[in-house]
Amino acid sequence: MKPWKCSKKKWCKTLADRLQIKNAHGKGLAPFVLMSMTTGKDTVYGVVYKTDAKDDGVLLNVCPWCAEKICFVPKKKVIK
Image: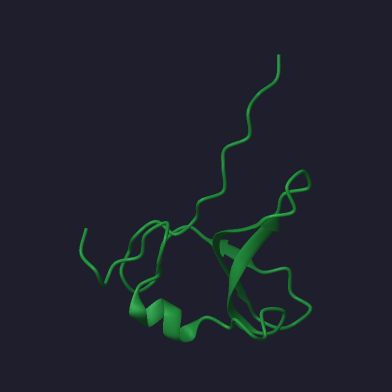
């Protein structure tokens, strides 16, 4: 894997420069974070794009700049 590509541990430089970390509830690109109710630990699962602060946003599957997978939400297990 090349260093300028997104991975599960790090975003590519172009995406990282455009993420709204401090204003994650506003317009633009923001990390998609879920908190485990059992451990209380926050985990980043991807990137959300919002058109405004009230928008729920769209979870991006692929980085628009490096074309690598950036959505890491675990698949739901089917209970029989």
